[in-house]
Image 1 (cartoon, rainbow, N blue to C red):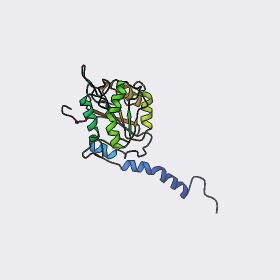
Image 2: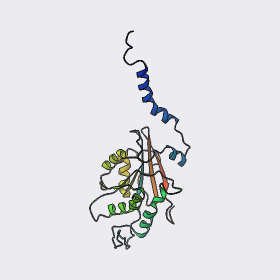
Image 3: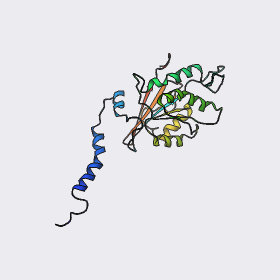
Image 4: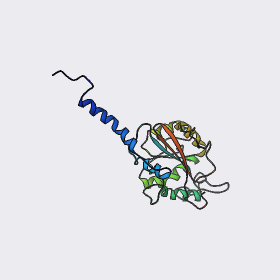
Length: 224
């Protein structure tokens, strides 16, 4: 019997079936509009995602002392570079936004980034303090190898990290981060971070296209 031509027969059909299986699964995945739809399409923490998929949540570090006020470090010592009392309370309640907290509305981060920098620098200290309690609850280390100004490198690392990703950053550097992610032209994305500490910006990339949502934290009295 003559040999079958290369690229035909059962072996070729098996290869095609294996290649098309992920596309078939993606085509069957559903989800309603709004938050429930987003949650349905969110991969499990640390789950492998297609190269074009990403979910990056961005928050500003919690409240700093106002002029004339004082912050306190982890030992309770007065430190102007640390969070104010309201900022510490926000940091303590931040885990309420994510599973396993009951009623949480956001996907559980698999990777947490915070601004890094030299010892005694205010922005890195406040960023790390903001996510310390959350990282402990998630049992995830805080990645702080990037300083404010290195948003291009941060974006590259965030997109290569296990998803979903949470970034706690300084407000003036957030637009540079969004630009480095390639999401700065998404409709509805603000050009600057507002004078608020109670927001989460969520950027979701599906099949190479970014979408944006701004979500309130509602963690403290006075949060809008």
